[in-house]
Image (cartoon, rainbow, N blue to C red; front, side, top):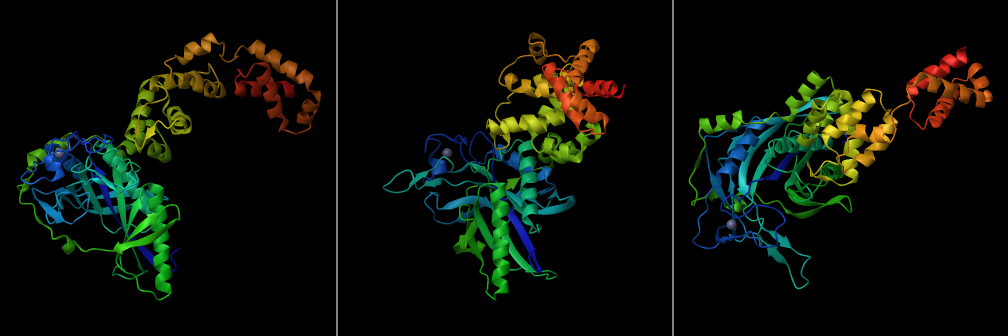
Length: 482
Ligand SMILES: [Zn+2]
């Protein structure tokens, strides 16, 4: 697809952690407060203050490291990354540089049936910056420091991805894991899960890496894939035309579907990193790591395998159901309430998730409220499985059950919706329909099988849609062949 060239893609993810307070002070780390209300002398960078490391941030970082197979360093260290920007009042960001907390590890992704392992270089902790606001005030720009000091994990992959689709699959797998760990909500639109992509191309067979370009400003999975796709094609075209590529940072413009140059890429030495003198080196002993490991939840790959083995689900259904922890939990609650596993999977993937999307109950990975309780949806599924109502009746009832706690069985009883399974009543309906449609009966007998569908429809109509369509079909065939 790239005309003799191979793509080399590495991703840097910044994940905002769901701790109650910031990384080096006691301010709230919650999103959405009025500007500059979650601030104090420490996170504003006033002279004479000292940072104190939030233990919970370290615990969250260890969780992420263990869940992705990293080695947790016993000794790690914070560093100062020096640069000037209005949203960084201290003039430096406290991050980790030479001695990160987590190294190595990787994630398995499957793209078009092919499994690949994407290596991780490192995971480290750092503080977020404030936010410049350029459009709120006509007279100039403003700065909101609420985000300054909010804890971040920077998760750096190896340049192991070879296509935009693999980059997308890696991001989805990573977000899914962070969400299962309950350490990040994964909301790309609100910026709590951000991604920069490093892209280069090289002739197939080359060992050396091509000139690397960093892409920023991609706020959805779709945009990451589109931006990488555009950038790879741009680089191949430039090389084919004999142009030199420059190491640079480019911005993705989703409206024009292109990347454009922002600045030449700075190198690490431009930041004058040095060890943070106000924080002691971090020591994480084996007992702490073991305690965090023991408390890890079941992670998506394991849950997927269990859903296939224990519930007999297809690989596709198991994957859809386990990408999100809340969806997987919902499925298990339905099964626990007596729904068949395949039926539960079907109701969730075809009906429930569609309603969630339509009603926008979906906050990135977190579904704020379910439109119907799993026990109620299980009860509806059981009415179909038990033959009380047919699937169409059940689908018709679903909108009326949303946002209520009505028992589906009670609704079916109250409205007389139970399937007509009375054999005599159905026989009468069948005879009646055949008598009224002699032409179609003739057509069927002369071999035109398709007309059976019409006759089934007529019987369904006379029973108000309450007949079991399979039974109707059997009765019709029996009557027509007699
Ligand atoms: Zn503060």
